[in-house]
Amino acid sequence: MFIHVTNAKYCGEYKVWLSFNDGTEGEIDLASELYGQVFEPLKDKEFFKSFKLEGHTLSWDNGADFAPEFLHEQIVPNSTPQPTPLSLRG
Image (cartoon, rainbow, N blue to C red):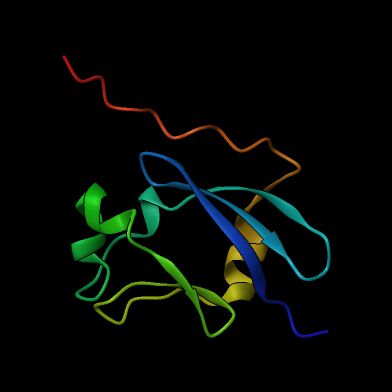
């Protein structure tokens, strides 16, 4: 079976909750994976949050992406997605 990401939600910091076409779902922390020229811009949390699903995986506008098989191997299975903190406006 070809593994691909079917849903993704930002959880805070560099964490993303993912679901896959095989039914697996859980959270991954990508903080330790943001090295190298194409991944350096993802250290900006606002840019990191701008991911989209494209080509069966997470991708960013600068061309960065992760192989869906890598993401699948790294997730913490069945973890509950945490809500994105809301900004308080006064």
